[in-house]
Length: 357
Image 1: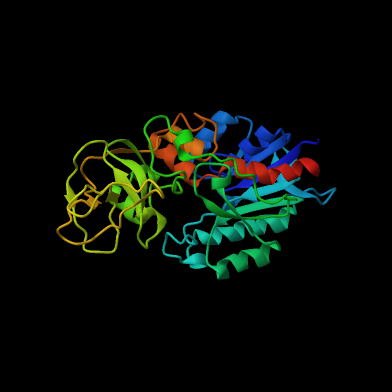
Image 2: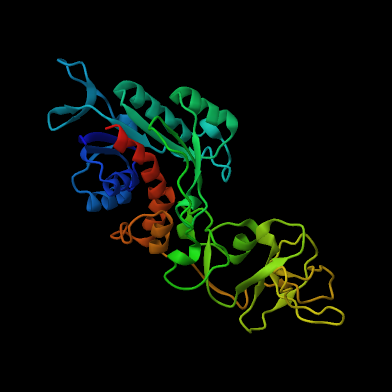
């Protein structure tokens, strides 16, 4: 297998290099365009031989006057690029943002990827981005000439993270489901679901119980005070049907005025209501919203001890080696992990390279 030259745009902490390394694909030169000094620090700590080129907007292609080949100049030598990879900034496309799409200056950095793809003409390429409006997706598809592949990281990890991948690398379907659940990656504590919410670059800010339960944002881990015990027999989304017990504690309880938006707790018997959990189907009695029935809903700020995922747990969600991001603050670790790729998804895509290089 010959050694390849790789150019990674918007490289972050070099998840692409981790994937190539773990697959045993030999790399001659790994060039990286990145401006985040902390991500660069982590990448160089793990891969000291990589070559950082700075801002993608200031990256230019050099032509060999003899061969007419175009490549990246390093130490007086022009290196023809075999593989171009990158994940241009996603904030303008994300459904979690304002969806300015290509009106967002960060989204326009995609055209830098296109510029270098056209100039370098690598044999293989990969572009990653978030799920987005069909109009924006079609613009990218038309410019790259390939249809995107929709892969959810939950097949190889304990994280729900749907991303689109445009590539001409031969690909053998979707990754096999490894059956990894969130409890598998915890250092301690327990969780109420099998898969984590997507970890984003703002995870370092932490979350809160209301956002977690009512909006399905920012994964939390529980130390005490809460256990999932079943599912409410109501018409609502799955996360709103979950029913909890409170570890023998008596939390402050309240009635809801409707909408089923609060977390539910296991009912206590009262009058004709027998309470408890139906053993046959794992569902609780119907949750009532009447004002006198005070044992339906859990007040979010009492009886529950919770925390954020640790940086190591986030590394595991992204299938990055434990300790890979050590050496910078936890804030910066969370940011780069949220911006990074799920390595095992990239490994699945790069498997096709082993057959053709």
